[in-house]
Amino acid sequence: MKKLKEAARSSGLLFLFVFLAWPALVTAMDNGECFDCHSDETLTRENNEHGHINNLLFVDEGRFNRSVHHISGLFCVDCHTDIEALDYDNEVPHARQLAPVQCGNCHSESEAAFAESAHMQIRSKGISMTCYACHDYHYVSYLAGASVAEREDNFCAKCHNPHRSHDWLPKKEEHFAFVECTVCHAPEVPRHIHLKFFDLMTNKYYQGDEILEILGISYEQFMPLLDTDKNGILSRQEFEALELMLRQKNVHAIFHVELVAEMDPAAHQVTAEGAERNCEKCHTPESPYFNAVTIALPNKDGSVDHHRVERAVLESYSLRHFYIYAGTRVKLLDLIGIVLLGGAACGVLGHLTIRVLTIRLRRNKDK
Ligand code: HEC
Ligand code: HEC
Ligand code: HEC
Ligand code: HEC
Ligand code: HEC
Ligand code: HEC
Ligand code: HEC
Image 1: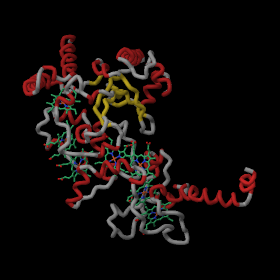
Image 2 (image 1 turned 180 degrees about the vertical axis):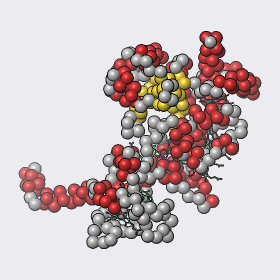
Image 3 (image 1 turned 180 degrees about the horizontal axis):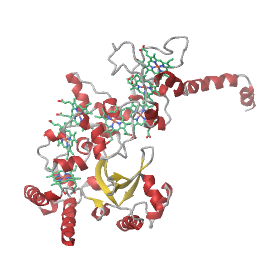
């Protein structure tokens, strides 16, 4: 023990400190140093023989700072790991040719899931897809709060037009609007229904902090205020109390409902053969797809807090129904008839569909 203390006091400690801190100092190489040159919009690469995406070497600092990686505390050199120091004696202070960035160094599970996807199989056709074909690299944004439309625009719809296929699926428009592609195409991914506050007056989603400001509470107070029986999940009554509170504050918000994939590496295991096409998987009261229902409160930085609510809230009136297409009412009845006839017994008829229909009928009566 005494020896240890002595050792600690000895000059050896200084050596040890420098030794341990050295990698940390390198990692902490300030992004500002990189931006000294790379915030120049005219900086370009001299040659592009190595299959680079572009010659432009400009990195947009504002956008980079809003990315999930900057928010998570990553530095440029955490990805560009082969830059260990900048040598300003050279015109270019680092190697002109840097090694390709390996996203999988930090995201090994996503990489492994991706390796089993239809998108990896196309390698045999000579097409190779990078992680950033979907995600971008400097400007990777949080995804959990994005709507189905945003997710599709950012990802799948960049390359696929689903309207050209899926002819077996009725109401393609509705399905693509309310069911994220990966919900069907990545069979292993956990899904949940996600409810977001939507303002009918401005046609915009509310940010979490806007809703909280209206309620006059902080993020931490949201569940304690609403979850009166303290069981960690909002019941239908508790949910309706929230609706009432908002109405009293004169907020014309409804809940926009979507079926989305959770943030999970399994989202990458995209398949065509294994994709869901069984109507009964979703359109039944027992559907496992509707087990998890959450209110999504988006934070300013793009991340999202999810709060569990009981599945029964899906029967509530203030959910934005997917039946924005009022003209399809009669056609819809026919379709559901067909599903019923073609499908199994009456029990098959979707809980969802029944709910939608009865609400429609009830609303009709109210008119
Ligand atoms: C003094 C200016 C300067 C600084 C500082 C600088 N770079 Fe560069 N960087 C350049 C120039 C010039 C090139 C183009 C080299 C070429 O292809 O001729 C370049 C190229 C690059 C490339 C492309 C490499 C490739 O393989 O084509 C990356 C990535 C890069 N820099 C990252 C960084 C990072 C990260 C930092 C901070 C740690 C940084 N740079 C600091 C000037 C700079
Ligand atoms: C999340 C990882 C990641 C971070 C963080 C990151 N880069 Fe990159 N960077 C990449 C990838 C991926 C590429 C594209 C090709 C490759 O090198 O693999 C790239 C390419 C570049 C290029 C070449 C031009 C281009 O756009 O293709 C420059 C210059 C560059 N990065 C600079 C920076 C600077 C400066 C920072 C910090 C502000 C930074 N990078 C932070 C992943 C990252
Ligand atoms: C074909 C498009 C596509 C490609 C290519 C892709 N991703 Fe994803 N990635 C997604 C989708 C979709 C999600 C889930 C978000 C959602 O459902 O909207 C996701 C989610 C993620 C997440 C968050 C999930 C989690 O587990 O935290 C990470 C991290 C990620 N991807 C990394 C990668 C990496 C690394 C690669 C390359 C090996 C890659 N992605 C390639 C589409 C893609
Ligand atoms: C040095 C480690 C590192 C590297 C390399 C890296 N990431 Fe990340 N990535 C992170 C961290 C840390 C997070 C934040 C994790 C979290 O918040 O759960 C993250 C989050 C993500 C997310 C999740 C966004 C969400 O909604 O949660 C995606 C997508 C992603 N990275 C894609 C990429 C891609 C694409 C590359 C390669 C260009 C890459 N990452 C390279 C560390 C890294
Ligand atoms: C960067 C372009 C790109 C993006 C983004 C993209 N894909 Fe693909 N995808 C392709 C290509 C190319 C193929 C191979 C097409 C072929 O084999 O004819 C493919 C194949 C597929 C297949 C297999 C088709 C078959 O017939 O076997 C499915 C399913 C698929 N993609 C779904 C998706 C989904 C879901 C997303 C979003 C998460 C997505 N893709 C994002 C380019 C993309
Ligand atoms: C309700 C479930 C479901 C949804 C939602 C869905 N798909 Fe599919 N998709 C399937 C099934 C099942 C197949 C396989 C059909 C077949 O073999 O004919 C398929 C086939 C495909 C194919 C291959 C088509 C071809 O020509 O062979 C692509 C690409 C594709 N889907 C992309 C998408 C994209 C992009 C989205 C989101 C906009 C999406 N899908 C939404 C179930 C779905
Ligand atoms: C992955 C889950 C899923 C699958 C699989 C699925 N659906 Fe749907 N379907 C939905 C969701 C979610 C909606 C939108 C909810 C709504 O409109 O009430 C929807 C909407 C519909 C609608 C329109 C209802 C309306 O109110 O406008 C019909 C009709 C329909 N689906 C029939 C089918 C048929 C037939 C199949 C099988 C060929 C099928 N669905 C497969 C999830 C699914």
